[in-house]
Image (cartoon, rainbow, N blue to C red; front, side, top):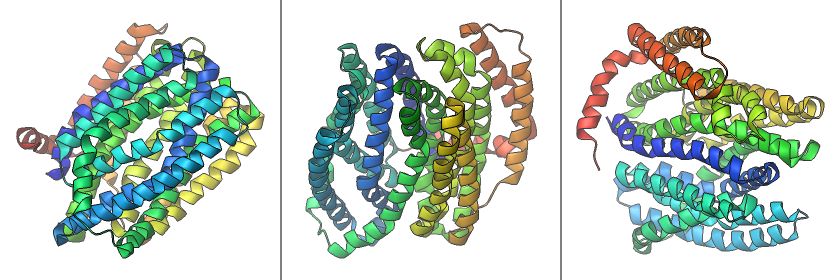
Length: 483
């Protein structure tokens, strides 16, 4: 039931995140020029890589070790180790990041965006540490409210700064200022716990041993997701990066919201199932989670591809619209494979604490993406970036499944895959047969409405992912979800 309570509790936060993600595309593709939007995309990628490389191992340790340390009565030592290590890393990071932003030979627009992104990284990590704490403890409502505050605040502040003319730095400064407001609210409680504990060096070493491969694997994951932008900037122009990032955001953010929602509920539930019920309890929980991912995310990815043109026509600014519509279907496919890999297949490594295998699994698609982008972008431009990204994520899913079986074999719900696939195929045929065309809201809502109705009826008739029997769990979660 922890999984289902998490799904219900995190739903409002992910609805807000989805709305904010789409509004961000609408606002920033209009408030920023294509070149400034491209600078934002590059700076966002650079800041994400820096965050992951320096701070993510602490966030991963907070999430994975919380339940174990709480059961053992050592939770204050757990916090002391994490926050002491964070303080040291943040001080060093800010010095190095400031020097890098100053010395890198970048144009003024890109330099300002990169500097804004790097300065805000420690603030975002502090907020993430608190959120991982609350998720691991099953405190759904505070975690969801923190997420809502960060996402909505980042959009409102960032859009305001963009309207004032701050260019590509505006969305990044908005995210940093929103994180600062959240940190001011949550940090006293976190530090209060840390002060009562002892930051043992051996504990920090254990967390680093566990978390460093996770961070490095996520760096490879980010490299997989961002190499194409750097290549497009190098081989083509910042405007091409803006076009690509607009289409990427349109599809990947939508799918990412769904996978983050499922992962936020599923990750802590899987850890608790393993710690308290052993392998059998974990397999049952994992099968349920994977089935629900397929039920929701498979039709979502196909649906995004089918409505790419009317969706881009409504949401994306005129200068980026046509290219974004061309990118969206390919990135929808990439997002599906990326989400299933990250939020299901990769849990085999973190649950088993064999994170070095996770690093090996991520090295395969990262290397494939690097080679494919070098091969395809100079020759095919934007199309080459799309093809390379999709192929790399497919390769990554296969590699993670194969290597993950050495860590902790997770069940593949073949029945759910087949039934959800059949329902999605019928949905696709129905959407393609909708007579409304010409783009715009009418085509979008006609096709989306037809897809939702047809898929829902087919999935229920086929009992895809056991949807009929799982209604009971959802009702119980709605009735008894804790604060």
